[in-house]
Amino acid sequence: MTIRNLAAAIAFIVLTAPACAQMNIQPKPQQTPAGQPAQATPKPVPPPPGSTKPNAAGAITRAAAPAAVPSQSAAAAVQKANAWLNSVSSLVADFTQIGGDGKRTEGKLYIQKPGKLRFVYDAPAVMEVIADGRSVAVRNRKLNTQDLAYIEQTPLKFLLRNQVDLARDTKVLEVGTNPNATSILIEDKATFGGTSRINLIFDPATFQLRQWTVTDPQGFETIVSLFNIDLSHRPDPGLFRINEERSRD
Image 1 (cartoon, one colour):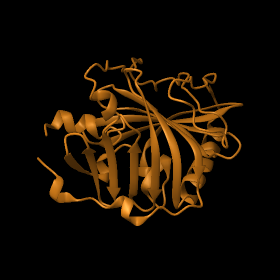
Image 2 (cartoon, helix red, strand yellow):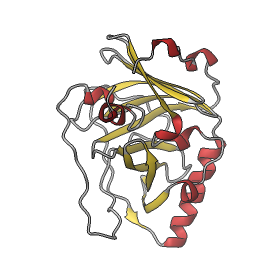
Image 3 (tube, helix red, strand yellow):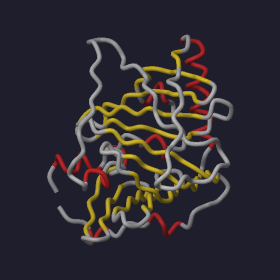
Image 4 (cartoon, helix red, strand yellow):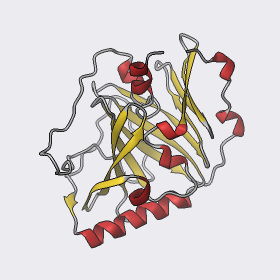
């Protein structure tokens, strides 16, 4: 596997891969004046917690762009986001993903901290992503191939840590809020292939994570929305096993 392909695959651990496989994604890098942070832009926001996953043919509700908040309030928002992320030990949710080409895929997300994750994409998608606590495997069920990377190379590694501090572990570029969402735009320079930006969207009342947008080092943008979040169910440990014998260079 080439460095370029692996970089694309793990920006977020191939959350972009189903779209990249179509070979028609167009980069969408943000252009901002030197020394100034990128401004938050309107992003799709899922329905409130408790709603059902939308049909793939349906539209995702768009919220108004969160307005920038004063630094003191921004710091408080980051602390609340940290508190929610650190309170989660396991998570099961439905997800909808939109790639840079507008292609929509759906599936099931399983997380067990520390370090374990599985994205199961609904057919006809053929990708599968598994993290076992150390490595991340990207599987193509149709081609029967598998590629490995380290968790720490992925831009959403903080989702899998027992304890996270967004201000310490990443660079917080902007915090915004409106009645429907609180957004925290962060930058991670430690990802494979260069710097990634992640825009995290939280419920403004509970600070439950509802959505994220990853802009990878190549400028590809992927949006993932979570639905029907269950924090009480402990996933089967077998979901997170990687068969490294299937890997290829």
